[in-house]
Image 1 (cartoon, rainbow, N blue to C red):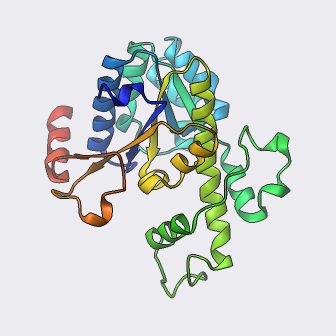
Image 2 (cartoon, rainbow, N blue to C red):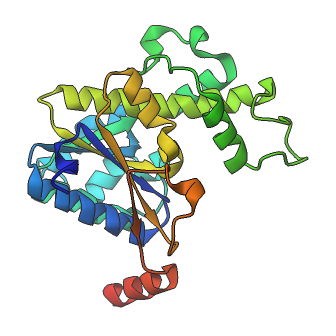
Length: 258
């Protein structure tokens, strides 16, 4: 944890609807904060336009209900807020700045459909054009979205019919990277990113875009349900954290709520 705390960014991958993963993110963030109080936590679920609301929450000007209403939680994210509230509460309690990492959602659709060149610079929501995806990343995305299913139009990772999806995915990757780079540039804090694991695994996605922006001292941490990491997964992250089986985690959550 001491070594990780000196990096430019530590990215904590998640599966959005897993309570146990969000508790793991909280514990890791707390551990990093114990070693480095110059810390910012960035969140995938918040678009840049919500930053004033995050600032008001951190200042103690909003209660939970008002915060979720003003940030448009059901619109911008929609997963149960109680999955994330412990992290939000921790940030407020210790006066850790919260950073919105996302862009406006229509931008993702527009870039996917039309390409970057068709988007006026003033409409890019602070996002710069993404560095083109590697063949390895295209293959990764193709595989996790169904591979060569006969129901899909694209027949391979390099099929031009797959370009639209890749452009859309990279819009998110680049948005997270741009906002992390911006946060790190304001006093050089460690930026902890709360981001879906599909944007992080194997150094693709956001880490790849961060490197293009000059943020190279980055670690990706991921939770795992598996007792052993197979050889093919050895490059998936800087570290994997073994979580208890999901049945145990759900049971513990139910006890906590009672």
